[in-house]
Image (tube, helix red, strand yellow):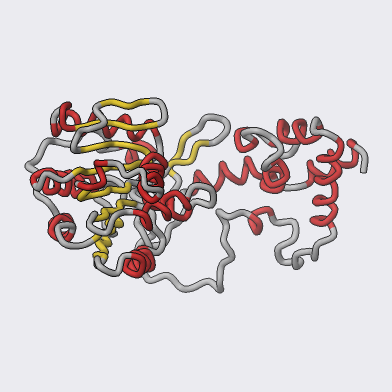
Length: 346
């Protein structure tokens, strides 16, 4: 297949296939229009174009769609799911009207200050960390940091060392500044690959790799004095346990942590927290693991669709994303998406 034949075949395909071909081959391909995608594919080295041509041939030789759906672009669009037989609408249920962009943006801003009252799940987590390991699985913005702060205060009141880990240096630096303001600069230290400040402080902020290395040194006989008084380890963003490349660091850290140390795992996106709690109990039989699972979002999510032309519209018909409630795409989003998806190559 020469370049002219390949171009003809690419033009006839929906843009989702072009993005599939470009994945791993073209940088930031998702930002390109169909025309630029085709031009970029044709500019690839010959061996990559041959591989793409083979994938195109496989698509063209795949079983054809039924006559009822062939030639209808809506049938292949995620914004037009396959519908069952039509149902009669209830006369008492008037059709809902989709919200506008102004309605979606309404209310966004700094909320009015209110007195802070901990939720029941936060109180439960703070009480549990005194005698067991704790996993907190709660949405972003729901108050996991409050649990961490209270647990830190409890441990420091008992003259114990606390280590707070995060997966990123930038997040570690942010937590260092945040906790320095809260606990006092002399009470907080930071250890990352390129920064070492106040390393003998009772509260140490570090990346998970740094803690794993400290625990490695302890197993080889080079005992770090901080481990004698280590009372609490907080692992933020603990869903990294499932990361194919870095997950082993979190796993080894949990396995190597001293038995007298309480573990507090925080995450908004652990898919199997119950299994993780059971695993922690299995590898740390002298300590139970208490699971706190909170699913209600304190900060609602709103979704928008940005068209390549720069037009911004609501993604869904309703204002807030309602978890496990189903969704319907906004009519204008459907129109714009399909206009982009099936736009002819020029």
